[in-house]
Image 1 (cartoon, rainbow, N blue to C red):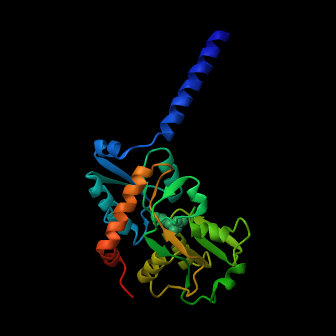
Image 2: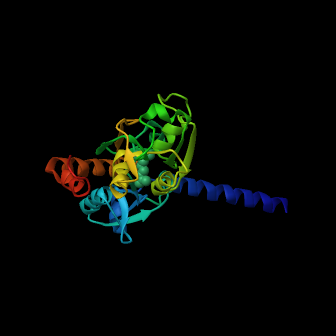
Length: 260
Ligand code: ARG
């Protein structure tokens, strides 16, 4: 019996070692090409970068990913999951890349590698049209809605206590839209979310809500790949550079965001 337990423990350890190695092994471009598909994960609650249009996931990040897939000569496969599951999906090998309006920040850099930035963004404040909140300083005694796990969540949660502005209470939602609905229903006082989605929410509800002029942060979006996969990262950067150079990136963005 004792001996059996020992054997079982040994087998378990062996299995664990093999699966751990499986996780860290890097998928090569040749592997992706052999599989015939590039697995991109996103969170399609973020118009104009990724959102659902009649059941189909569309947006700026989808088109950029499509170009990367084309450069590799494979099909693009898009998976729509929760925002805070995106980095775990890269780590477990369920996704080859993540394009999700994701801000390249230091904390995330510990778990994934980021491409060169492809877009500048900021955290904006949405309030109801008749709100007395005029700027970020007015949030100090207010309840603010954010999308779980985003930089807006990080800013409002202010774990390290380093941020210039503070809020009284943070409500975390799975989707930005749920936060905006609660704002319009009077259940929360403001929503902090990226400036372009904020603009889209206001475009869709112009009488009910507005975006304040002052932004809370400056951020850069980048595409994330599994940590250490430099071959894929280089390819992504190469495609991004060529899209920028040829003007195709501006064209893609222009389809979703009206020039000011
Ligand atoms: N830029 C913010 C962040 O990186 C929000 C991104 C949310 N993206 C999404 N597809 N829901 O945290």
